[in-house]
Amino acid sequence: MAAWQSGCRECIDHWQRSLHSPQQRRSQALSKICNGSTPVSKLIFLCIIGLGSGAAWSQDIALPDIGASADRLISPEQERRIGVGMMREFRAHDLVLEDPLVNDYLRGLGYRLVAQSERQDDNFTFFMVRSDDINAFAAPGGYVAVNVGLLHTAETESEVAAVLGHEIAHVSQRHLVRAVESMQKVSLPILLGMVGAAIAAQSAGNGDGTQAALISGLGLMQQKSINFTRDNEYEADRIGIHTLYRAGFDPDAMAGFFSRMRGATRVQGREQPEFLRTHPVTASRVSEAKNRASAIRQQPLPVAIQPQANERQFQLIRERAHVLNALRPNELVEFYRGQIAAHPNSSLEWARYGLGLAQWRSHQFAAALATLQALAQADPNNPLFELPLAEVETELQQAPSALKRLQRMTELYPGNRAVMLGYADQLIQTGTAANGALASGLLRDVLNRSGDDPAVQSAFARAAELSGQELRALEAHAEVALQTGQLIDAMAQLQRLLRNPKIDYYQRARVEARIAQLTPYILEIQRELGKTTPRVGRS
Image (tube, rainbow, N blue to C red; front, top):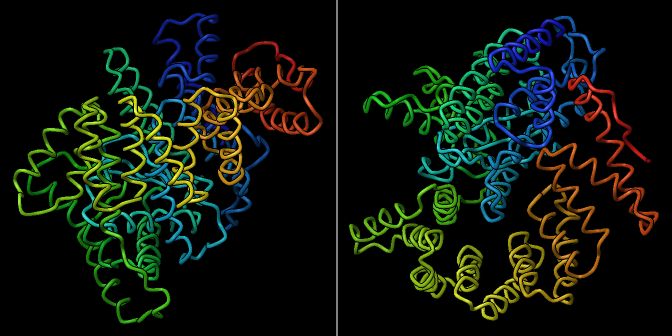
């Protein structure tokens, strides 16, 4: 592990020399690492703090002898910290699609599989990455990422579930942890490639290229840490197919998706999808997956655990993620119109939904209103239609109608995160203290269930400000900074809050606990800066 750290240091030193940076500039660059400035800086930060966290946070951990348990190599708590750190980095660069409807769908799909897996008590976090590359990956701590590109390429819900089942198996079997020793051999070259690609893209002024290098490199890092041994990949397939079947999905979907990816690349001569580079698929592996699916079908499941895939919802969510991730939604307006015109005798609900969303994102609000209203009339009270309708009504200065619509939805779907967040946002936009208090109450209930959501924290901060809850607003703003990788900024906000004479006993206890959690990270950052460590904690 020491050799790996040394290699990371050489990587950092090479980066500094290539930019001809003096010590002062180096300190400034590393300061930006903590506050989300550039993708290149974030890569270096991951090298020091995140991906090397097993060494950075526990210097005394030594690699075990062959055959030692995974728990001796890295504890579940260390896994969780690595995963949390990775998530913060992704959020710091807006690489996470923070849409509650999409996220709730992915979480529901993921936990439907977890409920039938070998590790039903494990905590998982499923999230959508803003990338058109066809890929998915698992990270320590139960984090499972799916790229928007993979969701959009999938033809059925079972195909997405198959990929999730495979990644869940990697986590449940602790393949990531068992591969830490081999990471010493592969991590540095990958990091160097990531840094080089990101620097090249940034030097050329290519923001999209820099983001792509970061996403691709991090996904590759996580999958390379598994080292793609035959045993690990086949084990993940075997367990994933079993989980897929028990959860009520098509067990042939895994082999079908793999085959389609390989076939499209071979026949059309396209560049190999990121998924195949990070999940090498051979003909024999596809064949074995097919045989396993055929065999497992001979094991009938009890009727009580035979739910069906929801293809309609999948298609709508697929288009929603695609439109929300699009850089040029106006082009999608023409695409969806073409699809509808080419199939006049088909309802093509997914295309009409995509059209309405693309019109909304292209600021064609009147057209979006008509498109979405037609969908909502055919299926009243569907959050997928009602929430964007409220957004469009707000843009058209029809706020009372939007507020009434969202209030009705909260009565139909009490506790639904997407609905509550939409209603709270609308209440906040009214600008009244009474509605701010109502919104903060709604969001407090949501935070009790999902406090690690920066969108909810940010909305709660605005609601608290509006209703005069100054200290709660300050605490929520600090949480947003923390969850999006702005560690030093979060620490500064927490320290200021702690000095506020109005803080009560319970809030002081929460803030002090947060500062205690942050202090080791800040100390590590300051050591890398080469500065005299500032005082952290109570002042």
